Length: 219
Image (cartoon, rainbow, N blue to C red; front, side, top):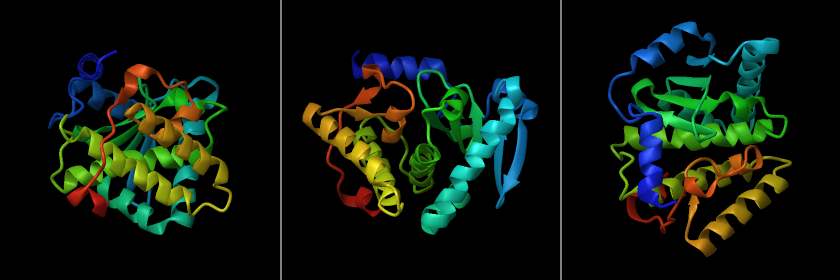
């Protein structure tokens, strides 16, 4: 699938993702969500509440945040500052994305609930999407021309976190393999590289990877 078609599909899945105002649907689902506040950050779940799934997803996100706070306080402080919400909901085609109108990292409920998704992977995904929020706060919008470099910045933040985990060797290897494969094929995933271990990554989710430079090397 070409990048143009993939982009159209992504925008069709959530046409208001990069808009300025929350959609009526998002507002309603926020109202329906079960939530709690962690260090001033709203964390909520609109997961289907079968077998107590909302509480399970909230607990997993909270534990992932605790992991970040323990091993990477700088990334944690940025998450608290740059995001207003972490929201578990259905995300078409992806394991997560940054929803600008809500300043939210939205995690797919199936990804969070999956037995193959570890807390470390959820933490990496949050860091990845929070980096998108940080870049937007700095005036760097998710423009198609900059997409390559923006995704490279997010991947670097993932590597920085994994390097601090005492048992992060496996994740480091997974990220390295993803980056190596991406470089060899000149493509990389739109979402967190770590997510490839949770749900199967489809080729339609790949974009060309460019070498980050200039302003982007600071993040």
